Amino acid sequence: MKILVTPTSLQPNKGGEALKVLQEFSNDLVFNELGRPLTEDELIPLLKDCDGYVAGLDYVTEKVISSCPNLKVISRYGAGYDRVDIAAAKANGIPVTNTPGVNAEAVGELAFSLILSLARRIPYLNQSTRSGEWVRSTGMELKGKTIGIMGLGAIGKVVARCARGFEMNILAYDPYIDKTYCAEHNIGIRTFDEMIEEADVISLHLPLTDSTRHLINSDTIARMKPSAILINTSRGGIIDEDAACHALRETRLGGLGLDAFEIEPPTESKLFELDNVVVTPHTGAHTKEATENMAYGSIKNLIDVLSGKECPFIVNR
Image 1 (cartoon, one colour):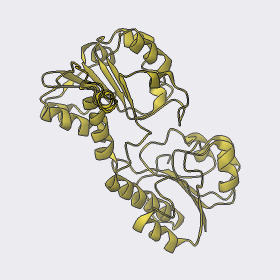
Image 2 (cartoon, helix red, strand yellow):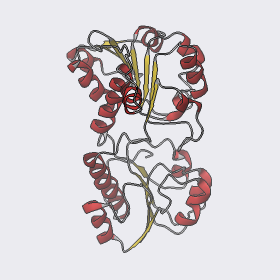
Image 3 (cartoon, helix red, strand yellow):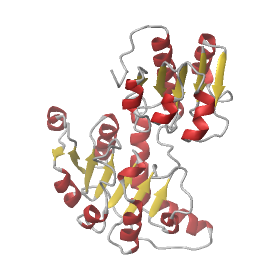
């Protein structure tokens, strides 16, 4: 069977033991040589003759899916699948699988790292000190502050655990909130509107859907505290980046931490001009432990489907 493998962390020189499992299953593997997520037009020539596909953050559109008549499974390397046209895959009888929860610790820890970086302006102070300056900068202590976690899934719960260690007040918004978990861990349940008005720190852990695209916009930012720190380690389209940039310039937002962008990789972003913005290259899941877990999980899902075994992680049954 011919299989395309596109995650940048799952390539011949760094696939590890998990890749050996796939190589034992198939000796006809195709890899992503560009070192970044693939566009529709880049993906089709590689995928059109494949039986299986271990998918990174590529754009798997209806056109891609309809151009690949041999394709039998799309196995997402990670939990999110918003870049896969789920309806088109289902219409063509192609199961889409994911690996939920395996990178929660990695992404949650990065989210909290961004919070700390902005609260104490660490990247800015690091750069200014290296440049010979001796800046006196007044930061913000986290103890006693209120963190609002939008999306209390596996990643959101890691952030909540970290926040508890800093003695923060923890609030959560989630359309499918686990009330029992919140009660057991002293997490206040809020509506979306209540959350954005009360929180000193807001951390986004939501999927990108039609209802969440630009959920954070000029109107919602205007209702936040002007000192608020906003963190996004989920999907870039949730934040209107132009609106956030304008608010930061006008000191109507305290800081912005991004591990996800509307366009990836971002180019010539005005956000890069601001010292109260900290950015990382969609690296939340890229720890040794998380990449190993995602690799094993996505490969197992692919092999299970292609071998006719039951796979519990099909998202489009």
